[in-house]
Length: 125
Image 1 (tube, rainbow, N blue to C red):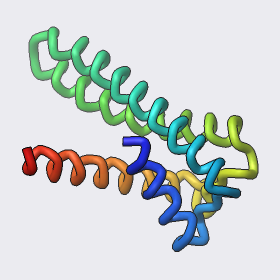
Image 2: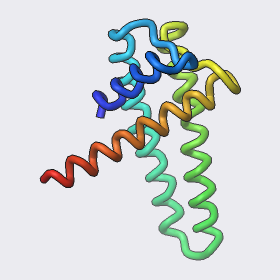
Image 3: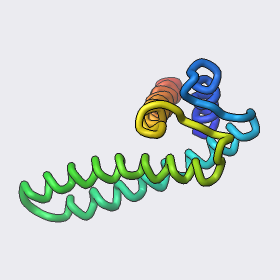
């Protein structure tokens, strides 16, 4: 998965002015860092969802959906700040709302690329 993240980050760096990564070495570290943070986000999201799955009723289902969305959205803010703290000006996401929209586009692309590769891998074997 890190190689997919690395590829996506570098393609955005090369072809979109809103993404800046200072060097290939920095992009490797950023891809590793991003993968760890995304996996932590998924772990937290699943734990929150599991908490509400155990509760009966419609309200629990609504709270599960709201908490899942909130966790996933808030995590992007936390991850963006963590990347800023870890890499400073060596990794930048420019544009609307301090790079949040740009970052979300990159993360969605990474997730879609990972899913595509997993489907391809499963279809081969």
